[in-house]
Length: 101
View 1 (tube, one colour):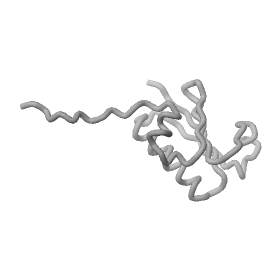
View 2 (cartoon, helix red, strand yellow):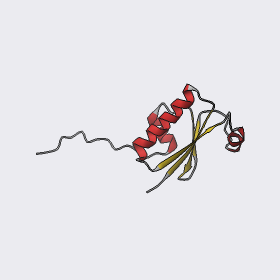
View 3 (spheres, helix red, strand yellow):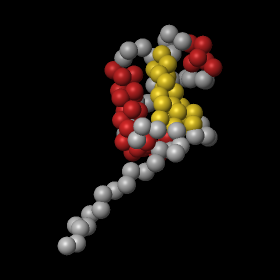
View 4 (cartoon, helix red, strand yellow):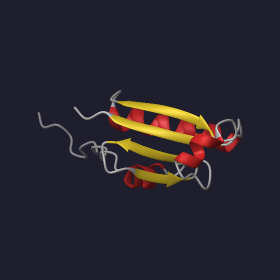
């Protein structure tokens, strides 16, 4: 089973920062079933880590594992688009057919 690792850079305790974390955790819960870890870094409190991560805008999420790394900037409110950009597994569509008796 693959473990996914994410680093989310935010700037303070803003609505956009909170939304990004909530949306990331929602995506992970829905698509990764507990096989993930999320580290949240406040770039305002840790500018050294933001510089090291080459963060130009917040919120930014980096998928660290599995490789290759992927980055998405924004609050991840478009769940489908964010999932594709982060390379998350596709949700299985429920069958539209009724079970046969």
